[in-house]
Length: 507
Ligand code: GLC
Image (cartoon, rainbow, N blue to C red):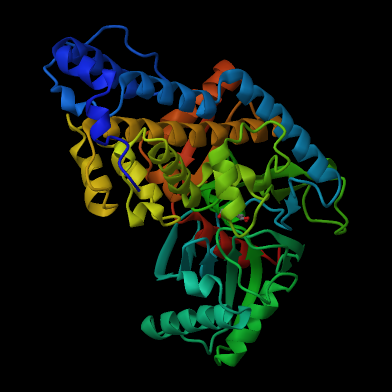
């Protein structure tokens, strides 16, 4: 891609103006840079920092263009309080519709999990956890309000995500077999297994359910519309793994909720903010009119909202042209719109889309690009974390990401400030949308008086400021009552929760 700053640019009035008034301009540059670095949740400082001498050649694009760029992006990516309130209202409506009948945007899937853990469960249970990027095999030892865990993690390659269903499930069986061997587990003893399968499943029993459709980059043929427990049992049989009873099929949000409720009985909601995003919560049975599963042993059931699909019709979500581009190029267009604006799989790709756009208009890197930057999903969400965490004076860590990892030939400090601001805008929007989802669930179950939300996933655990940004947003929509809502980090919840559910499946 050609440079936007060719030789004619040096004769441009902007350049000449810059050359003759470089020192005076430097104060303005400093002010603009400080503005660029101001997080969205804070008011920008009105005080102009002490001017430093900035050589005019550091002004890679006309100043006015940068201000305009930032203002434009802030307008597109800011979710203000009144927008959040609209989102919450629509969310609660969609939840109600989903509980009333099948085929709605929010699937609101009854999980067949009715009992809160008693906290006195004991025994050794196996758990498998297919999330987004990894597959984990665990042995969970329940010791009554305490659990111990042995686990092995396997990376799911992109090839495997698209391989045949038989290959995918044979891989799971192979992983279990390795784990059994490594830990010398005695399979002469019958063992229960909880299977966390974190995709939309039409559940028909605690250990039965068909995959409705794939997401998070999986397309593996031969699995949609099949009972995934049967597919796993067949793969175990092919591998000669006997005596394993698949006692529960569980979504990761349900597992997270249950494992946290084991420790803290105030836990009413489980949320995943990782590769994908979703939430589950306890709903009274009389508020699930579509339930046709017969009598249950309790007056409440965990409902898996599948909130990643919220507002697929794009009625209230402020979807930008960058979100639309990402969606169009994804394997599942027009679905999981909320997830695509929030979760770890997509945030880096949104930033990449914005950067490419600004390179195209010459607003960034003097129009220079790189092969890495041109490659879909090569701007990882982890880079955003690194950039947001970069507090060096010249953003040298951001420079390393852009120049050494992404191979952009050269960047100016002002380019880097702009990239950092883009990361902030996309990161803040994600946290505020997640908070809107949490506010909606809390509103639906009317738990303003006190409620713990158990949250697992890399975004919540590792993305800088994520939890605080969510808390700020919750305060904006819920006012003082937000103080009663505790957002708590849950770790390895889904595997432990699945084990717990498998252990108690019969009562
Ligand atoms: C996707 C899946 C959902 C899962 C979430 C988090 O949204 O559809 O079932 O809970 O990712 O892993």
